[in-house]
Image 1 (cartoon, one colour):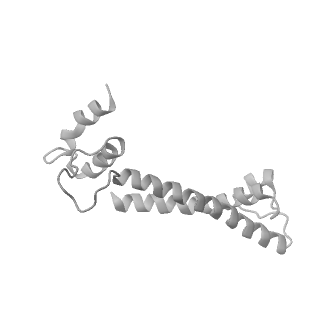
Image 2 (cartoon, helix red, strand yellow; image 1 turned 45 degrees about the vertical axis):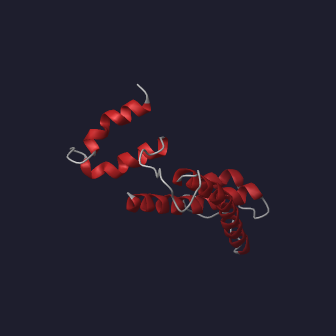
Image 3 (tube, one colour; image 1 turned 90 degrees about the vertical axis):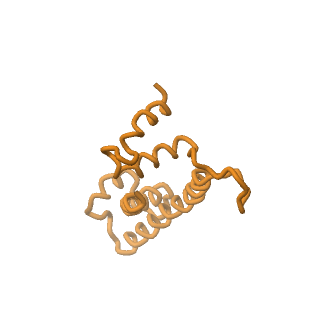
Length: 136
């Protein structure tokens, strides 16, 4: 059974009158992520382009990837610089466990990257989760 067959077989549960009608947005999200939607503009439109929203958002993800990598490094660099300026050997919190491997040197790019990721990722995950909930 293909993914298209599976999605088509469960669609009646999510359409008007189905027992999961209020979750239609979730069903449609998965369906349009995997396949092109059936209800596309066929006639003359103002914008004539072959790109759809899914492909546009793919470019957005690619563009933000490098910004996120720089945020990892810069956040870790600033944190490691502050730790060094305060004369601390380590910080006693949950981040100190993985940082035992990499150390807190602001001159070590891997240390800065990992330390920044430990600060940045929890905030980013919460942001994506809240945005996803509100979008649904």
